[in-house]
Image (tube, rainbow, N blue to C red; front, side):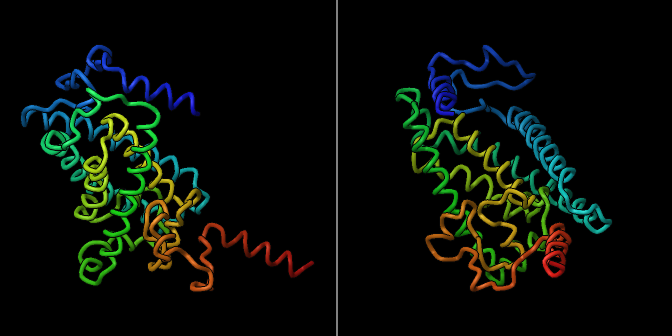
Length: 283
């Protein structure tokens, strides 16, 4: 794993690496150096083209990963569950549309104003810089997500924005993006780009972090691999607000069995639990 990370950082840090020498996509151009940005956008036409390609990528990733998780999930495919999945998908595709527009706009107009723009054109990018940027990304994103999430549970914001996401008490993978568009923009692109104004990120590395975070969130909503207990948040509402669990640990808002004595058992596990309890009674 360490060797893979070192290889990746050495490739990213290569000043001679020009993606246009290796990748050709109609109407889309990359910067001559990835140290500045991941895309070169100089006009509204190029912005719209970039939105199309970014949209194709993210919609495909969102659909393929979510559909694979839904297909492999042990939850019974009841009419109610299928209807919920369809609604999650509808809201997710809607929210992603606005996320793509804002993400591409930030790449075009905001990132060139970043004080660290092009930082690694003249500075070395190695494993140390990779590791620090990863920590900064995770901590900053967690603080931002936690703060905006707590605000989202206040009555006004719950009624008009965040409550929409909590209609899915037992969410599926598609629920990752099944949020109000305003919330999607705040917790998505803004949270993603905020760390780059705190510490110099290599653009390619930064967007890899964002991609992996998105996949992580899909897995968390699927419920089978949920290290920060996000599915518990959907059930109890008042615990596990952060994305990685860091802020919940610091501020004491993580799930506590003493505070929530009635355990949450997903519907797809209840039959197994009941069978085990019956076996114990027989023994």
